[in-house]
Length: 170
Image (spheres, rainbow, N blue to C red):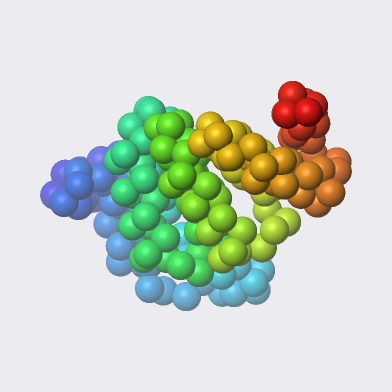
């Protein structure tokens, strides 16, 4: 164990530190959280937040392959957590940034199939799906996706790009 300014710090197999107080208290129900109706597993289990943050940090460092793996672990381990849909979206972004457009399309589709469509990143997921289809030379499907974006999210900033892409296809 290593002593940190926040108390005892334990390092897991991946080298990520976890405050010993968090480990001991992770299974303790919090009356405040229950009153607020907070069911996010990151509140009850700080391990989920650590895993999510690890994946997000890898994404920010442009380590897309590693981020995809870590977001996948998060999704598998915490399928009902509040940030699981975010993790699914970020996996799609990683694939998109790696120019693995077919996998990006599939990941964005899972984002919609497995979760609600009112997520703040839903319009972005659709525009990236459309752009991915274009990269794969499937303009017919890209056209459909752009139309869906315009109809479903008319107030989103992504419709500007969707309209421009539709115009360029005509």
